[in-house]
Image (cartoon, rainbow, N blue to C red; front, side, top):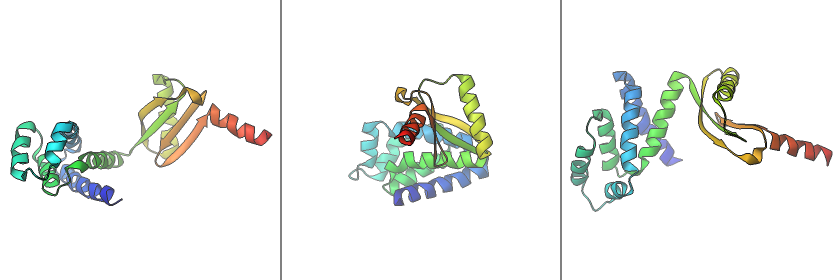
Length: 176
């Protein structure tokens, strides 16, 4: 919980700067680019190694961050200097959620028995949007043939199970 809170504080600071500059989407792209760099295991090991000085890490990163907004670069350096560079993905996720909330967007995870076509995806998104009063983005989407039919949706901390498997289990309990 403490790490999530810390990640949220870093993300809030960047979000305030991003809103001030009117560049929330641009800074998210930059933050995701830096996160990709940090996902390289050798780079991550180097950056999290306490035996390497901040100046050495900074000089290596300077060449790897061309075109990245100075606000994101400063955040990365702050995380490095505080020994929290491993929190970068959590900060990115928190920042993305803040942008989504600001835009009235909610992300929904959808699990279906078969891959959804565009029409089904749009219908689910529209229905969920009507229920929640927000724009719904289906992300991530996965399949589970064991569902038999229907969908399971995780959105806004809620689980909506409209699968055939679930309906059959309920029917089975009622009959027993």
